[in-house]
Amino acid sequence: MLIRLDLKSSLPIYMQIRNQIVLGIGRGELSAGQSLPTVRRLAEDASVNAMTVSKAYALLKEEGYIETDRRRGAVVRPAPVYDDGFSAKLSDSLSILAAEAKAHGMKGRDFLSFCKNILEELGQEPKEEQYDF
Image (cartoon, rainbow, N blue to C red; front, top):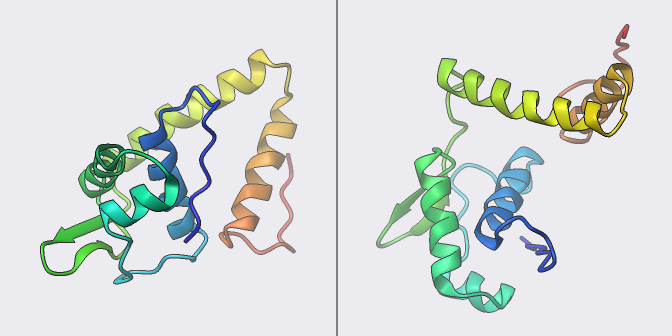
């Protein structure tokens, strides 16, 4: 898996690594049981400090996306359960994104269309399904 980092971004590198791995899982590029690179290997490949990668892996483990084992290293877990805790986290995140979109002058219809397009890219919704915004 190729990790793309934006060194000019205000988003910390460990969060960029975390987000890239979550996107890889969401897109089906990484599947349950698949091994991730070792902390050292990913740090070398991405030209970042190993502690940065370790922090990203710790967060992914805490969130239930990966498990770690001394023998096998970091491995993608089966999909975490969709529960009330995740629902609350998602609601908080989407509220912030919707507020940012509104602050930038984006209309609600455009925001929903944007979300629909992203879901389609992730294979979550059939392209032929129509939404009535």
